[in-house]
Image (cartoon, rainbow, N blue to C red; front, side):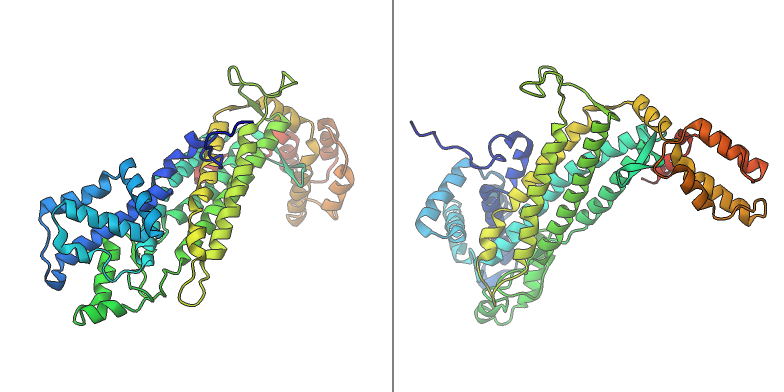
Length: 459
């Protein structure tokens, strides 16, 4: 048997690449290296702006040329860095040498020693991860989550008035509307999206053990914490003033916990939609040419939601592990975070793939209002709650002497099928006021939805 040519090991880079490829712009080795180059370049500019060690501010043209190293970063640069790392056996040192080469090409050799000045690798890495994760979340993952929320909210508005039998504990219960139930998910996800949007992306820039030791020896009169804060903030990040060699990663743990929370709510949405499909409440719209089963021609399987479930579970497994691992570092530094953080893209990739499937799945279902209506009409016993509650109110108002209305309705309805005629006869014989009796006689399961429809407006 001949060997296969090199193949992607992860389905995210193979079968599902089209759905998640946009994340690779940020959460890939190349994306990380581009961010590292960006941090090194901006640090050079920041130092020369301050005229440190007798340097002079770069001209506008020199700044533009240096920054173009980042904006024009491409495959040739990726390959060059890989070749450098093959020699250095150190990824950040390879970036430093890469930047030094660019300074030589631009005739800026005089500031070459300011490259990576007073930096530990983690000074570059923590800022680079903050940049790439921030951009991946804000530009890719969060917009996709918002698109799913919008799709759920649109379905909620469309079906706000469609009465539906609830199933608490899987059993017939007080009716609701399909719109209100979908609105619950849109509301839950919206809260989490707002929390994710408020994420602080922290960065440190304080040397080998967070003490500015090398900085102070090189330039005792410089207010290095101020320089550090201004530099970190210039990258659009929040400065962390007190760290060991590494930025403590607490912001990452907080973010990944929120994304994992969103995953679990999305999982709940997927399982509920799956169940509604199995009940016949939603019909699936067949895709032309698609096959549901290799042997049963009639099948249209809810694969979008099943795929989403699996990928949400995988995403949360990775993100939960990262959140637990990254907050611990032995003493001032160990490298467990280095290996762990290389999987950030995996965690977000599975979540993004799930979001894509849910969004597509929501666009491939159609509500069957007749099935919902028939289900309601077959479960008149759910009005037992309404009847016993009205009787209680009548007793308090002095218009009835019925004792223990709950027990009375429990005897009539618990574990039994009760039809419209049965309830009408029961209500007719109740000792309650005429107005209350007329309200109950007019009540149907489909009309017993309270203000479910208007609750959709709270989105």
